[in-house]
Length: 160
Image 1 (cartoon, helix red, strand yellow):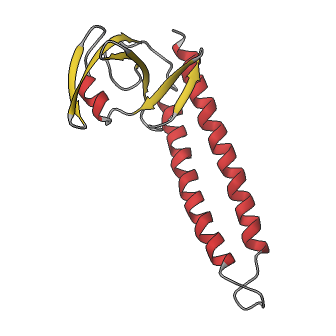
Image 2 (image 1 turned 60 degrees about the vertical axis):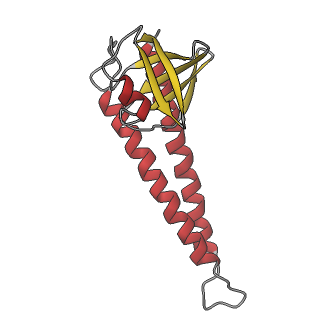
Image 3 (image 1 turned 90 degrees about the vertical axis):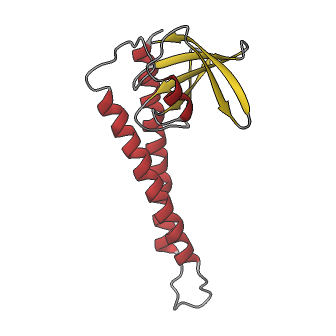
């Protein structure tokens, strides 16, 4: 497992998202400037609506930029391997002896997915219920997790 390359792939994805969101926001600001004002004939609420959308986009951009900075800062001292599940760990789990899922535990950007060496890796945070339950456990640990009215048996196959 080339953990450093995987983390770089995550950072590359986050940087690309920030870049794309910035471009979209810039276009939205141009649209706002070109929209008719409230006192102009043939005006509707376009300028107001566009401003509201731009404010939401700006908020999303700030959140994504913050996530990128948190991940960059966390790994600024280098990438190290882990023996147990925790912040900075990459883990591979099997659910019910069948379904393999790979996770990267990062300080932010939970819910994202990145493909690496043909495999999907889900980005999660230490606060996620599954990671909270597996925290501090290592390879071979088996946990029964109750969620959505059923019990899931999770086995940690690898931790890096």
